[in-house]
Image (cartoon, rainbow, N blue to C red):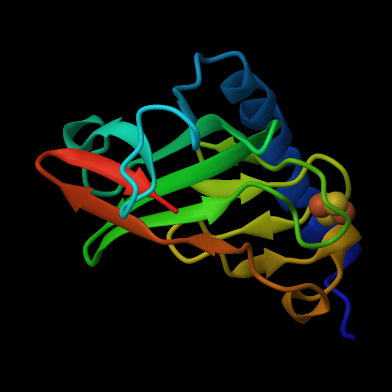
Length: 148
Ligand code: FES
């Protein structure tokens, strides 16, 4: 496992932390796997027009009695839906909108919102030290977005 320099890690961290906490205060759209869904397509997230190309949005939802977080990004290839559970030790990640990155508050891993790939591992370790964020299947139909 290779290490990222301490200076590099701290500079990335310092740039990410302020905007990470600011985004937590924003209203988060909600959804539920047990309500308002489609048996084939999954949980209804809302209208497709809510996310423009290049935009990322966090959704908070109910799944099996638990709250989960899904991070949705519209790329040139379509929508990408990522599980908001960090693959290191399971903390809920957050969105740094200013830097267009997903950041874990527990050990500061950084992920790419358009793929879920690891950019920086926990506590400055290499991107190969943990796995990417898990993905949901996302479908758009009749102007709405669904995940399962
Ligand atoms: S739980 Fe996310 S970096 Fe450790």
